[in-house]
Amino acid sequence: MASEKVETVVAGNYVEMEREEGDSKSAKNKLSNLFWHGGSVYDAWFSCASNQAHFLHFVAQVLLTLPYSFSQLGMLSGILFQLFYGLMGSWTAYLISLLYVEYRTRKEREKVDFRNHVIQWFEVLDGLLGKHWRNIGLFFNCTFLLFGSVIQLIACASNIYYINDNLDKRTWTYIFGACCATTVFIPSFHNYRVWSFLGLMMTSYTAWYLTIASLLHGQIDGVKHSGPNKMVLYFTGATNILYTFGGHAVTVEIMHAMWKPQKFKMIYLIATLYVLTLTLPSASAVYWAFGDLLLTHSNALSLLPRSGFRDTAVILMLIHQFITFGFACTPLYFVWEKFIGVHETKSVFKRALARLPVVIPIWFLAIIFPFFGPINSTVGSLLVSFTVYIIPSLAHMITFAPSSARENAVERPPSFLGGWAGMYSINIFVVVWVLIVGFGFGGWASMLNFVQQINTFGLFTKCYQCPHKA
Image (cartoon, rainbow, N blue to C red; front, side):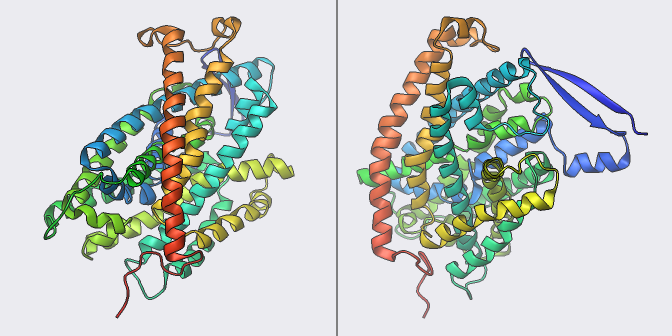
């Protein structure tokens, strides 16, 4: 009879019980752990970096549209906004991790067992602040992840078109919608180990391809770099970068998928720094080479000449979009499973069948709004601004407003931040900045731009920004 071992893991001030059955050193378990059952600090880093770069993050719709944002912002503003929002995104991811640890600590002191339950952000808000905060968090998070998944399908169709234009982009959206629906069979974030690693490699290849190919191509004849010259375009571009570094809507699920979630600290910051080594050179190089031409070409791959290297980048992006679709959809699957009461069932097939209704509206929305690029900014201003910047900052301030909560906090603010006063000052700045610049000006600009796309191309357009064939 296989022996059963219970390992006690101390995280902050809470105790997590991990149950390991059978011999973990067997060849079969080693292979399974390598490719399937990831939960280490490395898996979290791969997940965050991979997810941040593409969804947030979202490689194709972020990495490939950042040059488009640079053409709206200009070179200097583009670089500064990436650095600024990268830092701000890391800060709010840190806040989410603190709130997760606080929530889990309190629950595990009450002897709550999470071994067959995936903790989600709305549950953290519910446990710490009550049902109204839960409902607000659930609405914004689910809507953001829904449209994040929509953007993946749009990006798939946009990219594959540059390899095979025999089919229009709408038809490719039908095809990739069916392919992405297979993510219903992937149980949780534990099972993304090898995919996270591959996603990171694919992102890195594409970013450096864009950089090197643009530099080798050189500047086009009569290249102009007139940005920024319109306020609407300026704030649209800034909001796309806000969206770029708002990929931590799945922070809680990734933390829960770690065997030792207390090690999550700083992972997101390190992942963001790595992503900046990819996004800054690639966006700068493509904008340097093509300038204002990017204003009408939101996908950077559309301007580079076809070659084996470009086709490889497109294929890698397609695979990564499939992975990122899974990242975005998995929390939605969990919410739906809990709603219909099948979340804790052990049957993978039953859970897969229950998840299928989640994919259908995503598929439909991708066909209605195929505006690759402008949709990113719209989602960023209206949803990301609240989901991953404003709500976590406000939640942290309210959770620790009582002096007793600050005294009994599992993790206190580091002294170099100035203690609680320093932490509250940063939180207030984030809320005010994102509310005014991200949601206010960004929402106004991105909605104007989005409506212009509808007026120009129409809903259900067959081939958005496709060149006219002779």
